[in-house]
Length: 110
Image 1 (cartoon, rainbow, N blue to C red):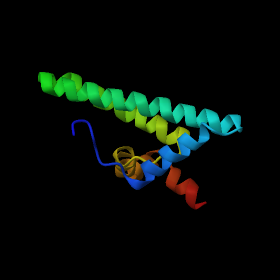
Image 2 (cartoon, helix red, strand yellow):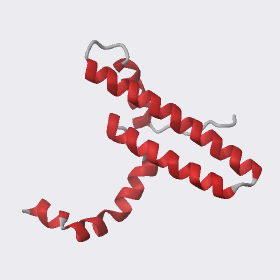
Image 3 (cartoon, rainbow, N blue to C red):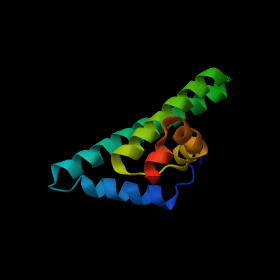
C-alpha cells in the first residue's frame, strides 16, 4: 500500500510509549507524548509531500522536504528518546570527525 514503510521495533515501542503518555497524570510525560505525536504527524506529512514532489518530477523540492523530515525526526529523537536509523546512521558516520574537531574524545577519556 502506498505510503507504508517498515517500522523498526524501537520506533513501534516508542509510539506505544507516546500513546501511553497521553493517558498519564504526569505533565512532563504527557508533554513528551504530545510532542512526539505532533512531530510524528509532521514527519509523516513531509514524507507524503516528498513522495508527491517525486511524482511531479520535482527532485529539488523532494530533497528539501527530505531534509526537513530528517530534522523533524532528529527533534523527535531528542524529545522522546526515539532512535531513528536514518538519523543515527548520519550521526555515527561523522562522530569521529566531530569528536576530533571539538576535542570531545579527549574530554570523554579524561
